Image (tube, rainbow over all chains, first blue to last red; front, side, top):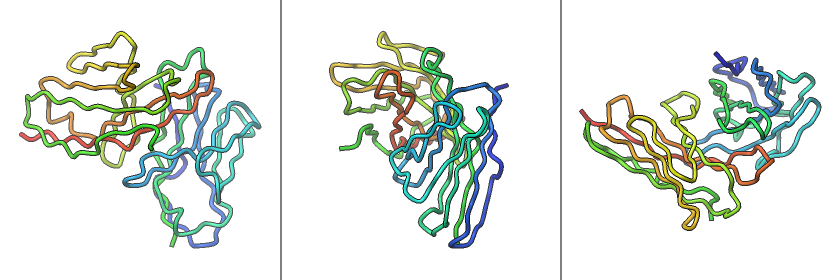
Length: 115
Length: 111
């Protein structure tokens, strides 16, 4: 069974802390994505990556950075957490274009609360 | 204008009824289309891809109208277990794997 694993299900952090959200996939997918999901706003793309050491900004990259040192792992970093980054964070992966007829596979999400 | 628009609902439908959702997208060059299902406090999961010719999977039928730029999902003989939020999803650019998600339509099936 294909899997995308996010390291934490629930996380509480203080304002100003550096926060790492980890995501690992075991499907040998080229593409990986970080979204946040908020009520009434849906899923919004933060960053994505098509390959190792590659990253591209999504629609709302401000306040975030990412790292992809290995194909299976894509990390989201909040450099200095703020209360407006309280959200559900979802990681997803997909194969490259020629095999991408099945959309994304999502991890189970990390609900981050910044206090 | 939102890139992918859905009626947020909620739709409250009696068990056994037929329910239909529509979704419109703004980019006429969009290439791939999907319906995802998301249960409360869970991650989205692919329900079905949407093909130009329309496609059916059991009680679910998806259709695409490129001329009018909308996608539909029909659920027949609805079950209690169909209660969820249904997300309309579009890939706007071939070769670019970014998917754009609608905000979802919430469906509750009433016994």
